Every structure is written in structure tokens, then in C-alpha cells.
Length: 420
Image 1 (cartoon, rainbow, N blue to C red):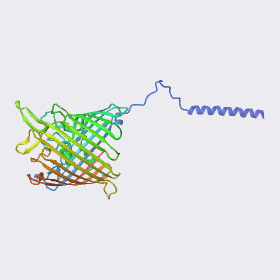
Image 2: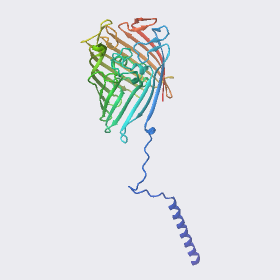
Image 3: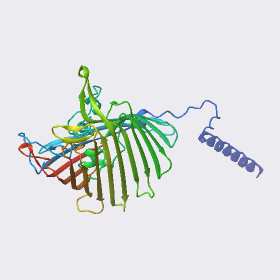
Image 4: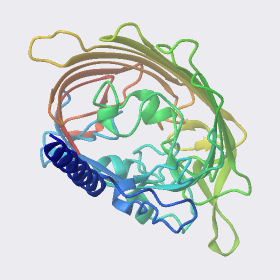
């Protein structure tokens, strides 16, 4: 028994030794001590932190007033970003690269390139930057080249709450934007086309107090100007407040010295724009009533000194003040609908009593109503839209004679926006 017992004990000791050796082979190596020169995680590549996006926006429109020239292609009044009728047209192509600043990487940038009729409509044109076609200033630095940049700016996150942007950026004013797929309706409204700026170049500072309250301040080269045409800067302030998450409220105020759209020729043939003080109050509210139904409203009130348009002969009268104001109301339903993804409605009223923003001598009051049927298919957004514009004056182009105008305009538009 002793002989077999000693052999058994010896065998058990050998098995224990082998098992310890096996576990030692499987066990991970101990972590290196701090400061021992352990390799750090590799820095992310640029393509890991830069977002690339873009879109193509194509439309065709039918104008109830018919074609306005011999080619069969008409001009849609009041819709400067979709001006053509009776032909397919590229409203917008956009390519964007963005690196957002973060706590770990506090600098960023945004480069947005674009082309098409929307980009052309934002070039510096009189009096407020819509597609009326008259030069807004005589600054030779302004060129169509600047128009290829929708936005181009650098960003610095100074604290988690405070960010500064420097460069060219889309205006914070208004409830609508240039990209149609970000709006509830396809065509841009009267306030956006006539009463508000589109872009600014300068400094933008944003401070976020909490999830409900933020403030913004901008010092810019003016209203739709890449280069300054005055000795001062345009100043813009914004307060954004959401008393509840479903009800964001935004108030904007702009003040600056701007061109009134006319020029004077001085000694040596130097052409100088006529300037005047410009202000704009812009109020916006959106109420997400349910997950599928929302309403919104926007109000503008602006004025320009040296801006009253007397008549087609004498033009703008120095020393007089022009004012404009208007409101827009919106509704959108995106619940259960046969075939469609959403239905959106818009109604606007816009008053331009001195004719400054619409360039109609004697002034006018415009109204418009729009209904938009929407269908999303993956990354594509298809829309069928009907729009009726009216004026208390003869303002809208009529087929066959560019000197003939009407008090109404009816548009039917079909559009496709393809985003990536």
C-alpha cells in the first residue's frame, strides 16, 4: 500500500505542476507600469473626423402666366431660387466638408461648395440680395468666384459652452434656409426672397447656457457682402430659448450701414454706392404639437434710410426711409398618409409700401399660399407643390410680352433632391 500510495502522490504532484505551467502560458502579460513608455492609441486620421455630405436639387415648374420669351422658357416672379418655368433646371448642387470642434480637438472647419440657380441668386444683387439683377455695390473685389462657397469658416471651441467661427456663413436670420430639403416647402417664401439676408462674412460667437437657452453675436461685412462697402460693420444678435423642448423660440436683430442699391459717380469717374442705415427684427417660433404634426410662424420688420423708391423715372429718393414687414405661418403633417410621407402648408403676407425690396415703384403688398406633397425614398426627397401668389399691383410676368404684368401668378413645381 505504501508503494502504491507514494506513486499516487508523485503522479498528483506532476499533474499539478503541468496545470500551473499551462495556466501561466494562457495568462495575459501584466500591464506595463505607468511611465514605462507604453505606446499610446494612434491619433485618428483626418477622414475619421471629417464629415462629407452633399446634395443635388433638380426641378421643373409650370407657370400659369405662360412662357415669357420666344424660347418657351418663362421667368417665375417672387421665387428667385427657382426662376425657370417649362424646363428642367438645376436649382442647387452642394458638397460639404465639416470637422466639428470638440473637447478633445477644439478647432474645426466647414467648407461648403455649391452651384446652380440657388447659388447664383445669392450673389450680391440689389437691394437685399435677391435675384433682381442690379448691382448692390461698386466694390471691385466682389466677384462670382465668391459665389461658389456656400459657407467657408474656421471654428474654435474656447470652452464647452463658447464657440467662435470666422469666415463666410449662412445667415442665422429667418426660419427658412437656402437648401430646399431643410424647409417644409420646396419654394422659398416671400420673407426669405425679399426681406432677409442669405449670407454673411465675419465673426460669429455662440454661447450655450444650457439645453434651453443660447445667445449669438455676429460682426460682419454687411448684408450678403463678402467684402465691406462701408466704414462700419453689420451687427447681429440672437437669443434662442425653448421654454419646453417642443417649442423653440428665436429672436434676431440686425443693424448696419448698407447700400440702397443705387450709385453716384464722382470726380474721376469714381462710382460710390449710396448708403443708409438698415435694421431688421426677425422673430421665429416652431411648435412640435405631436411627433407627426408641427406648426411654425415667422415675422420680419425692416427699414432702410435713403431707400424709398419714388417711381421708375426718379428712382430711389435720398433722405427718405423705406420699410418692409411680413409674416409667414406654416403647418406640416407627417403621420399616416397614403403613398405620401408628409403634407406641408404655408401662407405669407408681405408689405413693401415704398417698393424698396421688390423694386416696384409705388410699392405693393404680396400674399402667397403654398401646398407641398412630399415623398421620401431612401436618400431621395420628391415633392409636388402648388403655389398661388397675388399682389395689389401688377407685378408678375405674363407670357409673350415682358412689358405686360399681372396681379397673380400660379405655379406648379415638381422637384427631386438627392442627398448623401
